[in-house]
Length: 359
Image (cartoon, rainbow, N blue to C red):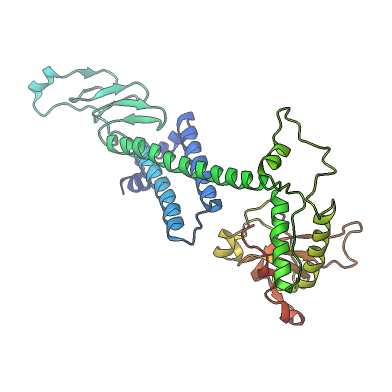
């Protein structure tokens, strides 16, 4: 509470100027960047937020940030405490044991020293710290030390999340390389299995570029010369497949997507903001973590949704003659609460939910 009281009282509002210094600017910038990146990575990490472990992990990250900032601002704004101007010991005879400060026009109390930066005699002065742009002394010694303790602990937690996030990405990358796939091709293979299962077809999709040997698959990407094998246009394929096996499956999936898409009518305008706060807290915090665009919606327009999350949908806007010539399609993400399903598509209400939600 000391920090908040000092901020509210701020015996001298000039204390706010302490923030306008290279030390606090760098320190707060590092704290903000590390905390933000750690929270973003914790959301993208394989430990989902809806699980107990994921929730505890995310709460701990927020807790580190709050405690670090609390002690940092406490050390900065509460300050070390200063010897009162004109101070002298109650017993005048004790003055013979004390130094006299010509600047403060007062005796220096035991364990106090004059700080040339603060231009005051500081109680139990330790040092003047540029990172808090203030002295460390009697009143803020504990806060400053706790800040120095909590900051590395928070960094260790953040570093652990960074390492695990990169490890997860690396593991997934190596796994698909050993199958001679890309991320998109892995996604196409999953959708092929989903399509066959959905329609209960008597067919099996075989990925054509998997050579059957992990070592051969690996060598197609990593070569001693650093130059990938082949020309990038034609590839060795498995027996029973040909160069266009994958593209044929893609065409089938596109046709299937058009059949399974659901028509929605826009009931509320949407500006196209990435994280729209005015569409609800849940919509704000569950915005898709992707560089795919958001599309602006106007009431009365129609959308064909092809996939979706719990609070977001992805689809194509149904264009009319009023749109600019040459624009073939407008597609992207939009909040689910801005649209309602058209009655004619009642049978396919769950279609957008059928797509993979964690992509």
